[in-house]
Image (cartoon, rainbow, N blue to C red; front, side, top):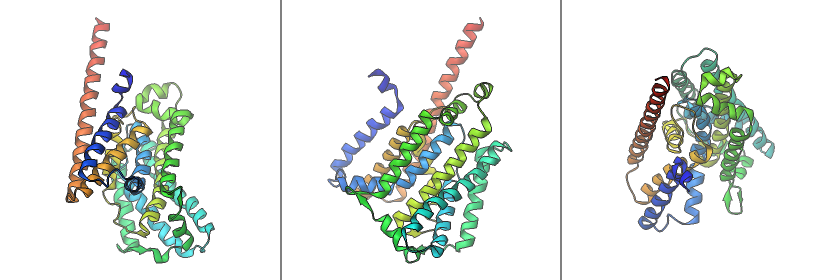
Amino acid sequence: MKFLLKQKEFSVLAIVVIISIILSFVSPVFLTVQNWLDIIEGNAVIGILAIGMTLIIITSDIDVSVAALTTAVTVSIGYLFQFLPDSWISVVLIFLIAPLIGILLGSFNGLLVSKIKIPAIVVTLGTLNIFSGLVLYITNGNYINSTNFPDSFMAFSNIEIAGIPILIYLFALVAAGTWFILKYTLIGRSVLAIGGNAQSSVRVGINFEKVKMFVFSYMGFLAGIAAIAQTSYTSAIDPNGLAGLELTVIAAVVLGGANIHGGRGSIPGTLLGVLLLAIMQNGMILARIDTFWQNVVTGAIIVIAVSYDEINHRRNQEKLSNIDVKEAS
């Protein structure tokens, strides 16, 4: 029990439960099954991107281009629909092509970070503007509505199994698959090792460049999946629809227990972070609080969560320094 209480994920779960109880008094609609399905489905895109961001943050890097990258893939899907037949083959092709485009864009970030050794924040700030600029140039800022989508894709978007929307199953599949990779595969353990101590991990034979390429390419892969989810959920393509979403993604990951300095993070923690942000947003909507407060809350959460991690990091560093001094004397 003491071990659980020390886990940050347990603290986030406790906060989720407390806020849920409070919101149930604010609105009787909050605890209904339909509302919770709407919350999860509506945040599936954020959740998928946050799962990818978890791996990047574990390796002590960050990717602020994820929203722009996802939008670029979404626009690619929209234009691709014009050349695809109205059959289930189109859905299969989209699930092959969209992640591939995402991998290509994500690996571009990874190449600059791993091979040329440019700081990730600089690289992804640059590619954020590149992707956003190209998207606005190609689309001229115009929507692409569902009239251009194959009926088969719209049918896929409306699938429900046991009353649960298909996007929730897609989200769950991504979460389970990434959890397995992180916990049971060599590349997953290498991600954790690089984040924990990059120099020591390199000394024991872990390929630093390969790991960095993997996490950014995998982020691109999940951005491709998120693009499909976004297109399916909105039944439209908005070149500006995901602007600023990277802040919410980062907030969810840090709030879920990932250390911004790297070395710590988990998929269950990230899912709890996404859920916490989602129910807070949903609660503000049900309470009819102005929508701009959602940005204020997200920003405040980032500042508080990062400050908390930074304070803990400094304390741990001071403890290690004291131990070294005592051993030396």
